[in-house]
Image (cartoon, rainbow, N blue to C red; front, side, top):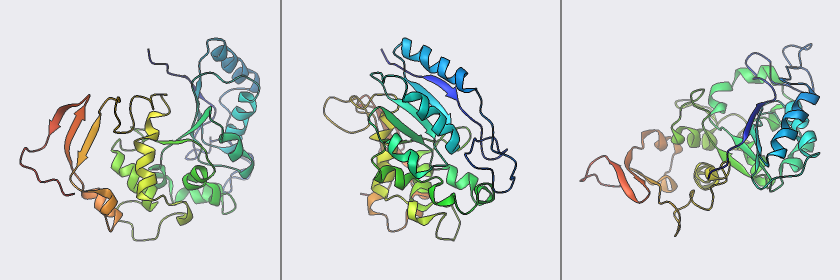
Length: 260
């Protein structure tokens, strides 16, 4: 039996200034965003989940929304499955160590860098930008991170998410990338979407790596990403084969030459 999670929305999004921030929006000094539930309502939801030994999966984009959830999680015992903090797009330094515990995971979507920049800079202002969409900082701080797409908000194609994580810019852009210090290596970006992609659903013992005893779910690409001189080559990489449970489910061509 697979255990899911109790899904909760703690706040909104940056586009309409509904993501909950601890300090006002840079371009709207009287707006701090919106909490979807009161403290007592959130506490009651989490308490009921814990009574059922269930983890929670919480949409938390703003730093204040994340703080509110972490404050409540600290009051309840952990369960055998991880709690997911989804998005965590605006961080504060004091919150990062509170995420870096084995029972919590940051469920992140690197492709949001493409959809949200440059307009999000006006929302957050220069002081918050160094810890906005700070995937490398999270990983280097020993926060368990997993990559996803948030489809249909962003494209489901994992190579587009990996490209965004490595370049921090949209396909075709010629600048260095948004907040270049947070760029991931190709290895770390692929790890987010493969090995760590199994962690939010607590399935890392059966999927995520090509290992003896696991499900043998694999995708074969036309190019080796770890030998690419330019990460934009990801945008021209095709799927040659998909294997599920050890069985070939799709094959582009039996004579296709795999570029290794």
